[in-house]
Length: 192
Image (tube, rainbow, N blue to C red; front, side, top):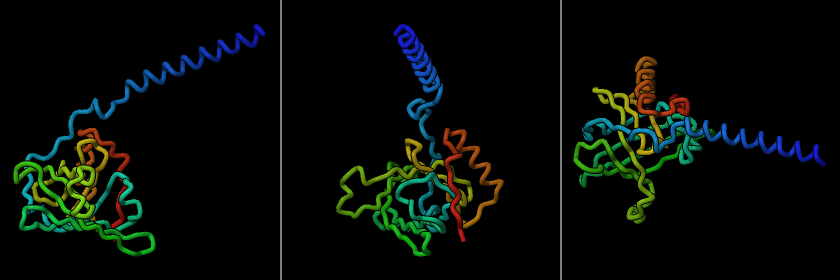
């Protein structure tokens, strides 16, 4: 009985030490709340941003789970100031998935913060159908961009061409790391 109690106390002590070490480890890992806010580019020339963008890489997400290649987005300015968004991708069986949406700018006409929805228009009054579309990186020639949200849950690297030079891509990744994005999570998108 005494031996059994001793082993139980030793087990309890080990478990307590393990919990204490986990607590210390958890405190040393940066939590999203502890990170600085996501920084966007200073201004966005929306008409210049219109056209086709190819997805070069992305954080995996549930709404693109069936996309395996050739993911692209086409942006078209509308007369009411909104942007029509047409996303498309190829699936494993070779078929194409299209998603038609709408984006609106938040704030000034040169704001890099937009919201986008792919739900039907009659649901647009619901806040949960809108998602952040923040342009956080964009080269001077409007050829390479990174888009995310306020919580760093999503990240897309987009390009005007299906392929990106390795040097430009690597430099972009370094800037994203400086913004506390876990670039190891990025999945490259095949463009054929």
